[in-house]
Picture (tube, rainbow over the protein chains, first blue to last red):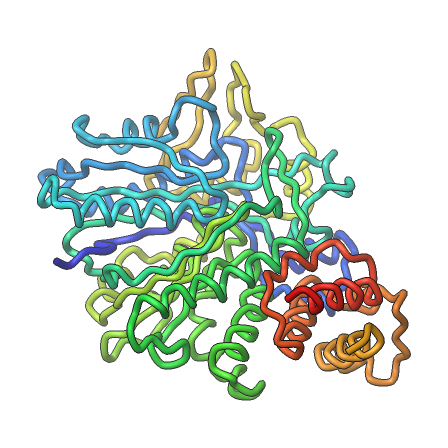
Length: 419
Length: 82
């Protein structure tokens, strides 16, 4: 039977920062900074959290469904490393604000940047099991990065100068069903690889630590081993010929470029000019959205998939090879098919226009958000949010139905819709 | 193969990734980062070196060295046991 992604949507923030502006402000070496291959990063506003991001990504998908189809959503998985509670699942809030059927399994899932893929694969197994024929699953990968200013520059701070410009905020929502219009999964074509390594993690609230070198080496090891495991399972698989596009987990564009170069050298014995052409042809379509949102952890490889679907050429059906890596670590290489009709349906969600309509933060506004006391810390008991903190950003919501965090009352988060 | 030959292999891959170092003398005490290699460059130099040596171990096992000379020594030790 057919299974895969029926539809998917991206929420890449209300506001963003131009990363070259940030690099100049932080006095980073801008010539070497080009190698990062990043353009913009989404910045979560104080009244935005992983729940508002997730709901805002999913809302257009839900609104596109008939009432009876919406009622067939029987599984809701929220995939994140930005949890707001050790016990209460973000799925409960998301379920409520999307108005889903109460006969729905819900939970939250964690595995660093691999979480979105873990959620997708879990949903696929639910559909394939046919324990509830015709049911649909909603998978929401949502993550935000919030650097507490005091943490910057410490011995354990994330990856030196590159972490801040590449860390974003975003969510990707997937509707998984027996009607895989957007992305038909190659069932059983999966290679996975993982082991214990402490490369990046979030061992304390509101901050993250990690080692860029260790994480890169682990990513590259996994990129090779997960693909080799895929190749062992899928007869005739060829890294160069089987996949017309490649979607990578994208911490930053330069890392994907390096990983692709390494893989092409190892798997295809390709020479540099050929690798460069292959990169432009097969990899760049998947980087477009990632370069404008930043690393969105658990949602990143799915963001790259959405970018590949929107920005590729589908005169005939094409196969996309997807690589997902999550620190700690767990990784997977899998594949699926995209058609022209699927791309047409996806373009109705106008992801690029949404990214274009975000509010550009000034450096002053960004610093206010970063250093101010406005951000909601983990474990906040009571707070009332000020939606007008960045007045310009409010206009970016105009005409769109958006969920925002209104207040936290005795640990309970209360949201409201604005438009 | 001794550690000096290993060191020379690392140097040649370093120059391949960073052509601007072609005429720059490189010492065992040099750190790749100080020579201008960013994190992606460093990972790539390590992967290329492992390829040249046909060394099939997880590259994360090479993590934690302080300079190019130490990297050559760790690689040498891995070659003896692989």
